[in-house]
Image (tube, rainbow, N blue to C red; front, side):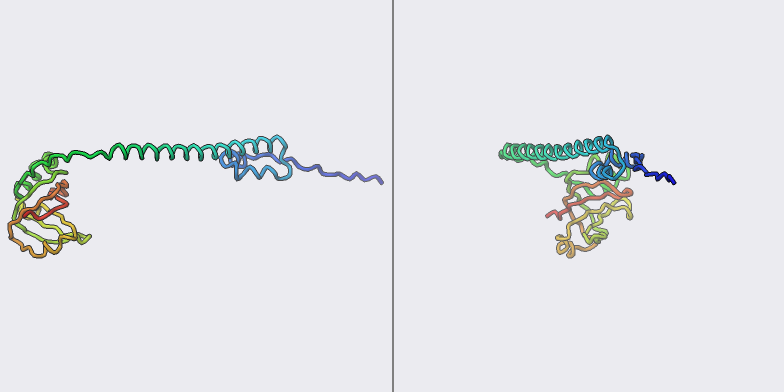
Length: 197
């Protein structure tokens, strides 16, 4: 009896779609899967050449960014040495003085115009204290009388000013020097305040 014994040839593996995408986008991780039994020599060569190109480009990008960073540091050092020349102090503008009622009325009449007049500018405001309180962060603020008893301008201070504000009483006339900070729902807001002497 002549029995034919069939010897199974090793099955050729195809590079599937998902493996191909993995090799394309993550060659250092997926390229090694081409070493499994059954992948053609051509698939292995293409995969490993692509992996080597990606590896060399990563190394090249690292050295380029190191060079760029060194150049950036040199330029920054040069500009800091050039920019350290003594500057003439700018002439300080005289503080403009307003009443709290005027500030309040300006914000009621036209918020945009009031922001142009007060926001980001250092001003002196005088008025009668209607409230002394702290915000949710524990920073103290004063409310001075405005045209509307519920929308008086607020003047925020630092926590270090608590002791000086603790001695104030409602109804006292006071002058503060602050930076305008716009408004919240028509309430004029000021920050970085100091009690004017």
